[in-house]
Picture (cartoon, rainbow, N blue to C red):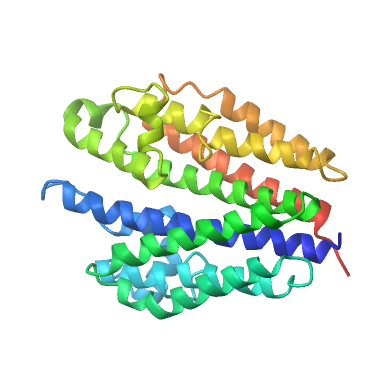
Amino acid sequence: MLSRVAENVYWMARYIERAEDTARLINSMTSLLLDLPLEAEVTWDELINVVDAEAHFKELYQGNTDERSVMRYLITDTRNPSSIMFCVNAARENARVTRDIIPNEVWEQANELFHYSADYAKSSIGRRKRNDFMNGLILRSQTLTGVMLGTLAHDAAYQFLRIGRNLERADMCSRIIDVAAGNLLSDEEDFNPAFATVRWINVLKSLNAFQAYHLQGYLGVNGSDVLDYLFHQRLFPRSMGHCLQSIGSCLSKVPNPREPRRQLNRMIKQLAEVNTKRMKRTGLHRFIDDFQKSVGELHTVISDTYFRYE
């Protein structure tokens, strides 16, 4: 398979996943701010921190972190490479340039997602129609992913689709944990347990993990259990452990996996050594920073190994 095609499919999957995860995050934060007491110190700029765009956002919006500014930046502002509209546009473009190898149904569904977002994204900046738009976008993103997984031949293109999706998913999971949960460990849970529980529940809901968390035997919602689930539970498809395991499975089915596999094994070992029972706030931030750096390094190795072309 041509390197350019492999890269297009890889990035198409990453952009679809990023748009869907951003929609989940916005939905979750909107619900959280309605549930928390007025004295709780939770602000919309936490969402900017998740996508690691503080400096860029400040440059564009002069540091104005009100709800509408943050929503505009995350939903419709195509100057932001993590905004929903940027990701949907980029996913559609990657689908367009690979139309000769992807099924027609994939292109049609990518078009559907694009036109839906173009028609309704602006109206979701306000709260009244936001939930409906986000749920519709999540449904269409999942439909597009399902069509791709159900119609593509299980060749190299299919493997790069899965690699891109799982790498993006692991990265977003780590970011949500870092920003939304990093200030909850130890002291905060003891000082205000009700507030901490609501926040940990929100972390699970941001990753669509709340129901699965209970169904897989976890009873109470507390920091160490939630972190253990999202780090290590390989049966849950959005946990960091599952994502890394899936990437490894894909690498075993493409040529020349030696260097990407070496980097991936370091990440798997890094994750396995984490003891969530003993983890403190500074330790969590340090681990997440190292993990996100490793995600970037794995992407670089994959790009250098498979996406070189004249």
